[in-house]
Image (cartoon, one colour):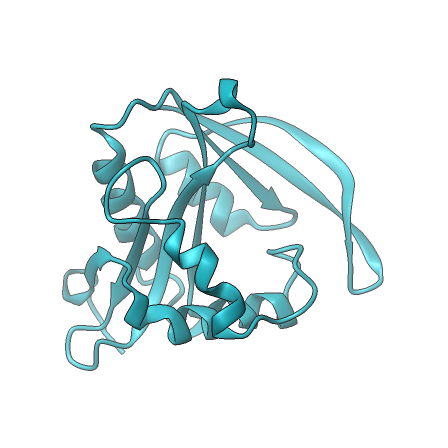
Amino acid sequence: MPTERTEVQVRPGVEGDLEALTALYNHYVRETAITFDTAIFTPEERRPWLLSHPEDGPYRLMVATAPDSQEILGYATSSPFRAKPAYATSVETTVYVVPDAGRRGVGTLLYKALFEALSGEDLHRAYAGIAQPNEASARLHERFGFRYVGTYREVGRKFGRYWDVAWYEKDL
């Protein structure tokens, strides 16, 4: 595990990352309310998601890896905000980091690379929904210029209870 932020490498995600990315996401599906998915995925079920994030365009997948092992430490994406055409210049962003890599700056490196990659795209706003409570995610988003715009109260039910989602937006 890296001890310094500068050791972590960030690159576009590729098909060879599918198994590790699926395992990382499944951890959050099984163990947390950070995602509202409730059933784990196989890599094949997750393949369309990966393929919907090419190396160019507004929908990106950036992956952070450890320098020696190339172990995936986390990923960040920009995805369509909504399916209707008028939303085309808006994206929803998200970041997931392996549990033992938290507080090492991996999320910061991922978002930095993601927003640099998006800087040349025809995008107007980025949005992020953060299941509550999640102070670390709120701080990360605020550091990148996201501002709080409101909360959907008890919008998702997982683990036998309801969860709020705070929404943030950022000018691009």
